[in-house]
Length: 429
Ligand code: ACO
Image (cartoon, rainbow, N blue to C red; front, side, top):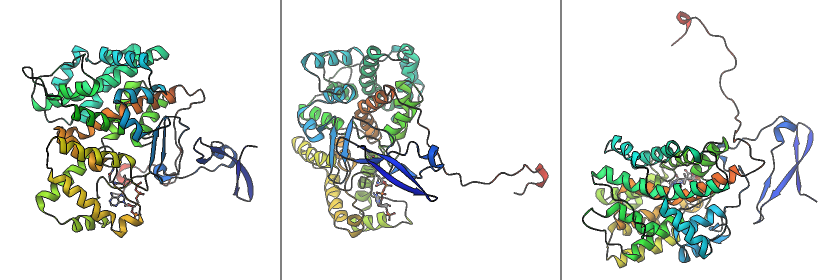
């Protein structure tokens, strides 16, 4: 017997189906609500709204659980490479030996950008934010590969590999452009992450010294960012994709959403906040007081999360990776000390305890990126490189859903009632 719930409206009783997920999470199916009752639901910020049914990522925010396709993120970070995790997210299973090799070969085949794209890089000012360049260049792929706009199963694999592979080349080229440095082309014998570091930091006459610990830390960081179900940027990708927009256009829109300081842009904000605390010598108690003051727009960046009301599991892994990397690289970063002390002060403050505000993934990721030598304005780009496989997987889920409809929320209108246009001379200021 399918589960239902009852709703009383205007003296009438309606029965609404209840949908149960594979982890037993419950949702009231209101898809026929407007047609049967004339009402819509109102949920500012969508905090109580399931916008879709998805089989990609599971989060339990109360328990601090994050799984991709059923695998705990802790296990994936420990045992897999970023490209394996990308494959898992996009195709649903971890690759076997043959698929792993094919996927690697495809990523290698597509790592170069179309040569004509270099004119685009030349047109951007050196001061351009790399996130702006990234979204523009991802979208520009639609111009170069028009045959990939309408995808069948086979061309989807090709398009997915192109976007996952090229995003790191575009990102590294954007950085080189901003530094006035020559572009370094990828090497087919390097792994995904090693190649990115090579394109970022090698010189034409000197290869970057690839330390395995750095490659591993970066790969782990990308894995932790690879998907996070219906966050702002992923919902954007799904929304744009639901209009049958192509993969490149949809992912470019995701990059724009991620850029915002309340989303992926928070990792840059965290580091700026820590640097500021250091430079101004502001006491941590005062910083926390400011974060609590509703009349002050300042927030404690890297704290709080819409879904996690417990430790963000990614923050735990990153904090450990951060300690390990700094030790191997013999880096004594005063910002890490400030971050740890700030965490202590915030976690023992009643405001943060009451609201269940814990460090999120961005709180420590900036320290790792800084240790690797990634400049501040590239932090959100690193998040985007990690998130591309998740976006691709979600775009595909939307496209292959036979009952899929264009995403089109409703609203409750609170504006003027109908009125007539007054002649110009009679209109008040
Ligand atoms: N500092 C101070 N107060 C905060 C913070 C913070 N970082 N985060 C939430 N709060 C407060 C809110 O003002 C609200 O207070 P109120 O109940 O008195 O009105 C209360 O805590 C509850 O907030 P939520 O409803 O949980 O916040 P929401 O879901 O709307 O926003 C968000 C979540 C945007 C992540 C928020 O916590 C925030 O701004 N954090 C700082 C930015 C950040 O780190 N973003 C990265 C998120 S992770 C990611 O995108 C990868």
